[in-house]
Length: 416
Ligand code: AMP
Ligand code: GLY
Image (cartoon, rainbow, N blue to C red; front, side, top):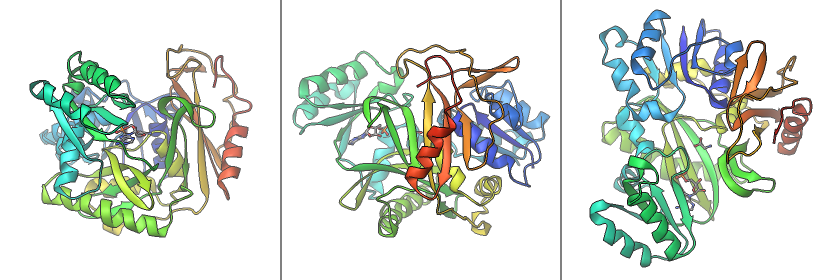
């Protein structure tokens, strides 16, 4: 089959690499891709948000499977838009329709969904301009810390944890009155603060059957020892040390099955991955958020543990055939280290030459491109997160050590 993958990050390089290993994959296209994906298939100058151009590419390149990497096109209804075109009505699409993607696209919607289906999560209330005063009173009446979330997509920046009431009211005003996140903060979810340890689960769901992929834990703080400001993710590990059979069963019974049953009960068209962010305390899991796409960098870390054919898994998910797929997961540990531009997550420069990338052998270590661009014959940085080194080993410590060692010969100015 011919596959078109939308996106340009480390997640997409990882998906492109795993799919390219499949005997089922004939031609692979990535739009717009990066310098890493260019070595695995053909990068197309098409933006995922431009549905007409994506549709034209699907026809021109005779695409059988479209895999949508990032959330924005899903939330904007790329699945519904493409499938409504007669010439694409048979296209298999990995990624939910707008009615499913709204689980990520609106925090208020996802909280109400969890409430309707008895899925454990933090208690909350949602406010908008019309209920502004009630929101202030609600904040003042709550224990600290308290969590404020912009309702809509805010590129991972729409959540603030406030440790005093004045601060919370200030953020509330910024979001609601001063539109700190534009339309995305025209509604604000105010939520109870949960304590515990975070981890993520990834569930492939084809509309009937589901498969649970390896779990992961990502580390978002910029500094060594989990210190400093939040980033898009500085690394991740899989498996997660405290995750065992008992916890897996608990998560499946209290969260995964009720989520799937909720999607079915509400006739939501969901064929893709449900990425569930969890907080675990004393063996009890609660949902922090749903995402309608794979995590980044979690995908880079979990894919090396999947021994099954990834292109086949995504195809089966998109076409409702997961029941026939076998999922084989390696018992090895995977650890990924993200290399970022100097200054990130604040301001940083792009276009800096990356040296030492030539001749890297991919065996049990993979160096994925996250934010890179090919210029003539050189690779330059093109984002905050630039590379992700991921290794498999018998132990987590071994995998981490291999990932750091693999970066020793790679260099660019400001590399961190
Ligand atoms: P989200 O965008 O919803 O994943 O939130 C971003 C981060 O904020 C999460 O990964 C958590 O670390 C933190 N967070 C969100 N909601 C809560 C909550 N109710 N209690 C504690 N931490 C939270
Ligand atoms: N690493 C978190 C995310 O992809 O949302």
